[in-house]
Image 1 (tube, rainbow, N blue to C red):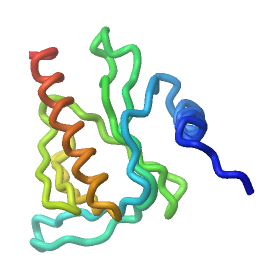
Image 2 (tube, helix red, strand yellow):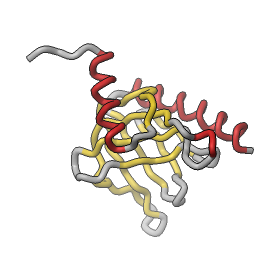
Image 3 (cartoon, rainbow, N blue to C red):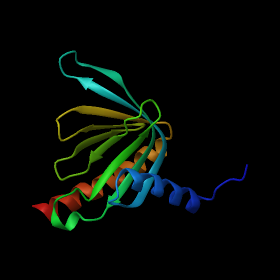
Length: 140
């Protein structure tokens, strides 16, 4: 079976993501394998979510009208037919404890992402910091 080069793989993944969301314009970075955890405030403990797979940080078009987020991350879930999509807005809070990236989403849920490859965790965190700053200045 022939191996796809990085550009071909990116184009194939972009096509799949655009079937989910026609506004996806570009894949900015990818993490090959992640697993999600959720934090229960009541129980003060972490539990594994039914979300696992490849993570894509994407840039979306149409954000100029402020009707849609410019950046998101999407996990193509291997454990369920439901993929995970999170918006990266100015109020997106996160913390990095490699190989984990912990975050609070718009619904105020606290989640953790475990990265198989710690380097990918660091790359995603760098992008998140750029997007949160960009969103803050653009939408403030």
